[in-house]
Structure formats: structure tokens, C-alpha cells
Amino acid sequence: MFHLSHRSYLLAALSSLAISSAGAAQAADGDTVVATWFSDWGTAKYSEPFDHLDFVNPDAPKGGRVVQGTVGDFDSFNPYSTLSGTPAALSSIGYERLMASNGASSSPRVADEFQSSSYCFLCETIEYPESQDWVIFHLRQDVTFSDGTPMTAEDVAFTHNKFIAEGTLSWRAGVSQMIEKVEVLDPYTVKFTFNPDAPRKGLIGQAGATTVMSKAWFEKTGAKLDEKRVDVSPGTGEYVLADYDMGKWVEYKRNPDYWGDTHPLMLGRGNVDTVRIEYFGDSTSEFESFKSGETTYRAENSSLTWATGYDFPAIENGFVVKETLPSGTMRGPVGFLFNLRQDKFQDKRVREAIGLMYNFTWTNGVLQYGLFSQREAFWNAPGYQAEGLPTGKELEVLERVRDHLPEEIFTEEPRMPHTSGERLMDRGNLRKALGLMAEAGWTPGDDGKLRNAAGETLKVEILHYLASWDRIINPYVENLLALGVDVTYNRVDPNEYQARSQSFDYDIIYSGYVSSFEEDTDFSQKYSCEDRNDIFNPAGYCSEAIDEIGDILLEAKSFEDMQSTLRAADRILRDEYFIVLAHMNDTAWVSYYDMYEHPPVDQLPPLGSGVLDTWWVNADKAETLKAAGAIK
Image (cartoon, rainbow, N blue to C red):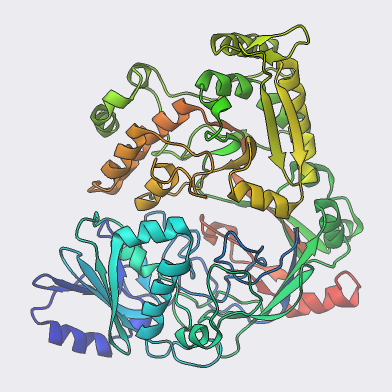
């Protein structure tokens, strides 16, 4: 950071500085700060000018293609409509945001920084007062959409207002509370003014996360964000839609005129010329396509396949590489999730009893080849996960919401997943579950089924869409039947599953919440009572204590304060027991035909090391594989 006494001198200096280097030259004149980066914590990994990100090979060649498989189908290319149509995979690949960060949906993503920082990408600099009442983006003047038209401030303001009018209800509600208005000051300058009552933490980052689309295209076509459609609006991104067969495959190609090829945030990235996604009816046929060379890269998510399926000729011939890569991504709370909108799940003892019938030890050992560990927390990472009795800042946070909490939160260690024996049915857990059910008013009838005082059975449906999950869910169903739950397992097609899950038409699904290394306003969007019917709150969770902690989180003055507040939230959320936490993988399993190369393993970023980001194609190896008939 450097300081200058006159803002005019600063802007003159910045105009001669290679701002495209994304160096965070930062200056203050009175209450005004001009910078190329922003962090709520005042520091950033790439705070000095740089040539490229640490995790890339800046000399990686461009060219070649990657073909991936997926299960399901699609009927739309609009990724922003959640209630109409099923968007094609990677349908947002052509759009970029004003600033780059480590967020899961950011483009481009800074995947080696745990602490959130935002770096100018479509902008050259940002300008804001110390009060952070507003932020001005001074845009780059070399950014073009894929149709060749320039991106201007009009496009930024239009896109923001478009999302406010037609985006998802939860996004509209959340962002409307933060951003009061967006103004075009000149063709390449746009100002975001924040609501006076909105907490300042996260606001500039939210403005920087604005996706930019073409105003002219939308006005010409009349297209909406909340509709299923095939037409694709121009984006500023490196890839564009090339071709497709609706519901069967889709192909994207690198834009040869992409404006950002040499930008330091993009150098060494997006190296593959063509990206093709093939759709299949089930995971078996999808894997067979990989074995035959129809698809060429695979991110494996089945322990059964990983442990037993890689014995086909392409492996034996050395054509396919099977690799376990490090992965430092945050593991959030995922498992068998209760829909708390259902009256039958209001009693926590019922939820606990149902959870006791899931045997992780047996499932992992017998069905998953011991390849997984069990999730324990809502933030499965050191410094975030509650441990022991609460102390320090975590205790201070809990004391502030003590009136809404049971005493055991303060006197007992945080809830851990139950332990189970090596046999599918753990008799001790069955007895505990029956006791909990009895306390909650459910006792076995003559037929063995649990019934309440009105004689009704406890009807529960587990909903899923992948056949490969039958082997995991069916044993759990078997244990629940033994308990006396009137349970059914319903596997539906992906489209029905999407429709039902988005409309909260389910009892139990295998799902969860996305957790981040840094939480701010998105924490409340996931867990607040106000957002109980938000798609980001699949359980429909609501708690006065967590509502208040969401506000406390925004008061954090340091990264450590934020972590302490999350530990308090973790302790409360685990005690509520609305997810039966299941398995997690601390690594990434990938397999690919031996023509893809990536930076050294110790250079790969902890937050993402995928083939579409930093990998490249070795053209000579690709030709060898084609000549051998290994790939199509």
C-alpha cells in the first residue's frame, strides 16, 4: 500500500502503471481509497504487482480438447433460472465478474487464498471512501463481449438491475438489502451505492462479484433471466457455446478473440481449446464411455468404481492415468438431510433416532472400501470446527445468545457423530433409537411399526436420483425398517429430483450446505429464519440464536474473530441435528487419458486443481493416443 496527498496525482500514476498486472497499488486521500484489490481484513496474498498466479504454468500451450461425461440431460442454456428448465453443464462458462476472488462461483477464481480478497479483473481500479458507503469501478476499456462489442458501464448497471428484477428471489432479497442503487458515471465508470443500514462487511466484495452481460443483446431479444431458453447472450469469458444436441451433448470452444488471454489473472489458464460434455442415462454407461475413450477426463466420486473399476485395457496399456490429488477444499455439512418444514421432524429426538440407524463404520468399511472419513462439523477444518468446551471469543459469542440455547451447549463438548459397530445393525444404537422414539411418543405396534397416540405410522421417504447410491441407501433403509419407521426409498429421474428438491417436496434427501473459509452475509442466507424457504437452506432451518450470530459475524474485526464466531455457530448447528453427517474425501480422485498435464502437485492450489482451469494438452501424446485407437 502506498499513500499520496493528491488523488489527481494518484490517478495519473495509475494510468502509467501496468494496472493489468493486478498489483494492489492502494492509496488514500482523505476519505478516498483507490486500489486494484480489496479485502475486508486489509491484506491480500497478491497485494503486490504480479505476472501470473502462483499455481499456473504461464507457458502452458493452448490447444486440444477435453471430453467429460455426466448423468442426466438438459433443455436450457440459461444457468440463472432455477425454476424453469435444466441448464446445460458449464452454461455459465462464458460470463465473468468485475473482480476475481476465491469464491466458488467466481470467474476467474483465485484458488490458493483461503482469506477472501477481490482483485480487479474487468476493472482497472476501484475507488471507495473509508466509510465504504459506496464503491466506484473504473472499468478496463479493452474488454469485449464474444460478439465483438465493447463492455461498458451501461452493461454493468443493466446486468445488476436485471438480476434484481429477474434473479432468484433469495438473491434479489439479499442483494437489495445491501445495494441501494447502481449509477453510470461515464462510459467506463460505474458507482454502487450501499444501503445506509447495511453492515459494511462484504459489501464491496458483493459489488465486485457482479456478473456482466450485454445490455444490447437483452434489449434486442427481450430475453429474461428467469426463463428456460436456448439462445445464449454474449459474455466476456474465454469460452463460447460452439454446438450441441439438446439433452445429449454440449460443446464449448475457446474464443480466439478473448480479451483477457494475457491478463495476469488468466495467464496459464483456460488452455484447452474445446470442452465437450456428454450426457448419459446412468453412471454405468457414463463410465463405460470413459473406458472406451469416448470421454477423456473423469472426476471420480464412486468409491466402488475407484476401488474395483479401474482394471480395463486402457489402464493396463498405460493409456489412462489414475491419480489421487491433494484437496484442501472446505468440507461442509453433507449427509441425510431432514426437511424441517415437515411436522414429523420437529422433535429432535425423532431426528436423532433416525440418524442412529445410519452405520457409517459398516458403510465405509464394506461398501466404500475404507476410503472415506466421517464428517464431524459444519466447517470441517482446523480453526473452524468447535472442540472441547467453549472458551475465549467463541464463548463470548455464545454468551450473547445464551437465552436461546440449552445449557449443555456451555457444559458439554460439541456433538460428534454417533459411533457404530462393524455389523450393519448396531444393536446398541437400535436400543437408543427406540428409547428416543418412545420419549417422543412413538412406540412399536403389533406389526413392529412405530405409531403415535393416534395410531399413525411414521411415514418417511428418502429421495435420490442416482442408481449408484442404491447400495448406500438401501442398507440404511433396512435399518430404519428394523426400527419400525414406515420408510420408502424413492429414486426418481434427475429432472423430477431437481423439481422436487427446489420446491422442498421431500422428507429426507442426501444433501447439505456449502461452507466457506470465510462467511459473511451468505451465512444468514443459508441459516436464517428469514431465508427458511430459500434454496440455499434445504433443511428449512430456523433458530433465533443463529439469526443473532449471523449479525455478530458481520461485526468481526479480524479473520480470527470470524473463525471464533463460526466455531460458536458450528457448536449450535451440530447440536440441532438436522443432518445425519456422512462421509467425506480429503483428496480428489481423477482419471484421464495420458495427454493431459498439470503443474507439479505441490504447486496445485488447495481450492481447485481441475482440468478446465490450469491443465493443458500435450499435442504429441494426444496424437499417439489417437493413432493407437485409444481415444475417439
